[in-house]
Image (cartoon, rainbow, N blue to C red; front, side):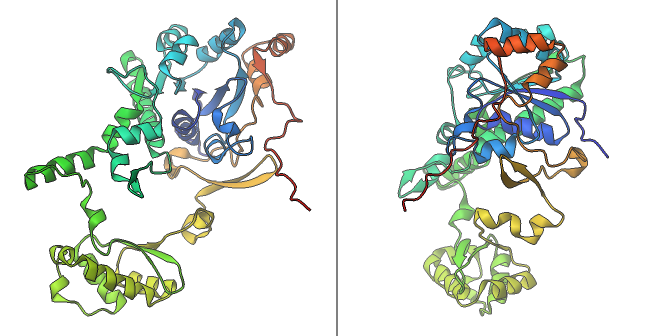
Length: 408
């Protein structure tokens, strides 16, 4: 069995919601052992669906170990000291105020373990808002994404929390860089990453595009991405009521679509500029051509012509298609009486052959064995649990509330 590139590394995750848990998920997929340190109430994502775990928790906490501690007391802090001393990486997305109150700071961690890599994902980096909290939609609103994404004219969030996941990915890049830097560059082991600054970097293309177009046109311009305004580029419904997404970015793309759809090439629509001037005509032509054929027939023609397309799939169908299944690109596991399939990190050369198909942990599921591994005797562990410094999973607790019985 070939281990992942981070096999042997231990990560302490003090994370909630998405950014830090997603980063720790990637580190876990790369072979690290992730210990998820949770407060008595657990990660917020444990209580979002019928009082139980959401898809976020199930997808991004699988394979982790859960230790449940109350860090507001001396005993909880003493346990944290031992965990930090034996870890390689501390990763969290506590607010700056909470990090100070719980003393989960770089100074405390470095004093206990000088070789440790410390990464704090927070709302904002250095600047006047450095101590303010921020979330995924705030990052979208503040970096221009939400302004351009509107539902019924109202600026709206994208839906998926991509900025949180980008921040988690950036955190992993920084952590891997710190591990590569070695012991002679301690300054690289104190990592501070803002969700807002992540959003700025992700938006760089669109922010620069607006500047370019404004200067070329000589007037303010708010349309960042020209391709989204291109006629023939988007989703259309086929004869059998399935949705197909067409990529119509270049003149060659248009020619290939015309060949696939059996359309005579119109010299008045040969260039993108011409098609933009006749947007309504192009849209009507594409719509009629797509509506005339069932999905499979149209897809075969588009594939033969080398045109870019895909079906617009609902979430329940995504993992049923051959590309997702062969070779299988997801792990299957059981959790709390239900079966799940969750996509894996698509880097097999880096992930290696990790322990297969582990579910996410129940709250406090590993508290006792982890405390024993830190050197605490059974009597000490019992005292921590009795005093509330540590918590263990209640085997009788329901993970999800049962749906109410339908009225008879």
